[in-house]
Image (cartoon, rainbow, N blue to C red):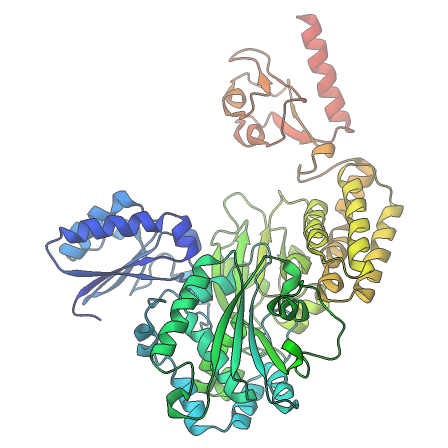
Amino acid sequence: MPSKTKVIVGLGSCGLAAGAKDVFSAFEKELASSKVTAELGQTGCVGLCYREVLVDVITPDGKVTYGEVVPKMVSRIVEEHVNDGKPISEWIALDDNGGEEAPFLAEQKRIVLRNCGQLDPEKIDDYLAVDGYKAIEKAIKKMAPEKVVEEIKASGLRGRGGAGFTTGLKWEFTRNAPGDKKYIICNADEGDPGAFMDRSVLESDPHSVIEGMLIAGYAIGAGEGYIYCRAEYPLAIERLGKAIDEAKGKGLLGDSILGSDFSFNIKIKEGAGAFVCGEETALMASIEGRRGMPRLRPPFPATSGLWENPTCINNVETFANVAWIVNHGAKEYAAIGTKGSKGTKVFALTGKIARSGLAEVPMGMTLKDVVFKVGGGMKEGGEFKGVQIGGPTGGCLPAEIIETEVDYDSLTQTGATMGSGGMVILDQTTCMVDLARFFMSFAQNESCGKCVPCRVGTKRILEILDKITAGQAEEADLETLKVLAVDIKASSLCGLGQTAPNPVLSTLRYFENEYLEHINEGYCRAGVCADLTKVVISQKLCRQCAVCIRHCPVTAISGARHELTEISQGDCTQCQVCVATCPWDAIAVVSPRSAEFKDEQSEESAEVTTE
């Protein structure tokens, strides 16, 4: 522990979005007038995004992390903890004895996230202090390039971008490919809705990615690398730029690294936000200044990639594993995980889950343990319905198979994919048909249009899903959906089209009853599809308390206390706030085709006529 007190504020994107900049400024003012000298610093995201803003107070007595800090809490933290050495127990999220958020970290195995939230990402000395750049030094001074490749192969590391190709094998192909000029590319074009793993690593520990690229460059004989990062990640790009400059200043990037004959430089290429540029051939086209569109393979990038030179492409998470493997050995890494999926996987937990944030777990952990042990289960009032995993072109899995292990092979058998690591937790308020429609709309919008199956096929699927959610479809449309989905997967040019139908196929496989309810009963059980739901007040159950009137955000409910209440269907947006706040369970979501809705409408009309 330090001899001087430190106050560290989490300044990742999640922290900044929660108000960390104002909290940092408040600490600057308070510490300036404090009786003790304390150092104020910053760090990235530790993964507890649901408790941001996070603030660490580190004293000779230990480390305490406060959660959900706002500026008005700062003076008390400084006065009682920094000055008087008395932690404020009711605000503690983590401390040396655990803390209330300890269960979130207890089941994790942190390799990729080992430094995230633990160091200042803008200070290379912090990275060096935790053995940063020791792995590239070891590789250059003690290992031949071929030995590095063999070590990565022996570790069993597979690409974390989604496809899961063996990393060491990809490196070997690129190393053995003929050509004097070779490239390393880090794919940081993270475009999945609900995914923020790569962004957080780049913001919180950029040097681990740079060191991984250096080792890859040394192993395959490349002298130049690119980090392709979407422009929507300005903080990640800023910190990457600073990290590259600092590494150059220390002689860890550039010419004759560590006094050797190995030279390597890194450039940042900002992407324009096209999802298809996550596909490696489209990504390379974008770097070359052309429109980001995929091409046929072979030739594969390992033999003919960037400017037709051999090119090795891995994503952020893959490179962040590399230095750890070189330092600790392939055997130790391979001891983690399952037979076919070694190591750990980082997931972005979002949706209806109690602890939303970043978690890194050993391969082979069950979905149940990820959701309920790491993620803390459902938000209050939520009933676990399923999980959407693998990004917008992944799959939707039901509660019935929650014991599925998280590894490449097990997830593939369920009809889902590992993807890059987005995991959206679903509850009873999620309509699976509408969810499939949302992801198909995303895929259709992001299609580059080069091949007909993806360009036209996704549009046809989206049209059918629109019909179903509007209550205008027939059962025969489901068969058409299946045929289209299978054909698009088989005939599309790149991974986008080949996986785009996955949400539709997986929801048809596990939630077909909801499709049939939409078609045959005109009913959306989640109350999401506007054309298939109406909010009605039961005049038999209504106590005329006017609670619903006060809570309705669009004043669609008329009446007053002790008077007849009525919902104007034309004004109602079906937000269902009234359903949630009615103390008498007198308001319900029903199908416009249902007898219940017709009866309520008749009762309301009759009562109005009587009056």
